[in-house]
Picture 1 (cartoon, one colour):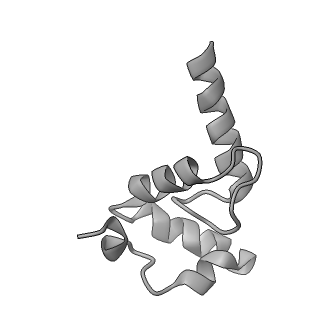
Picture 2 (picture 1 turned 180 degrees about the horizontal axis):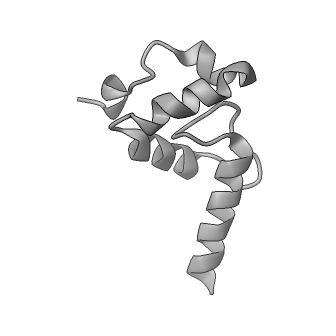
Picture 3 (picture 1 turned 90 degrees about the horizontal axis):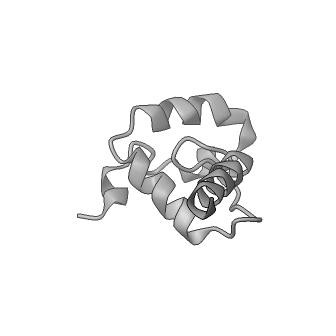
Length: 77
């Protein structure tokens, strides 16, 4: 079974791409059993300088970019 089938946000796509629901979406992500897989996929497939729009793994695009940049920097140093 694909991790997306287990996601707490399944069927709520529009909400996760609307800033008005940011707090509610973060709460849904926090309780999701596949949050790590969602964030990992987002980090792997997004450009380090241009994250996709929407909340993924509980993070907004700018947070994912900062997280990935810190992680990349730590691997280089």
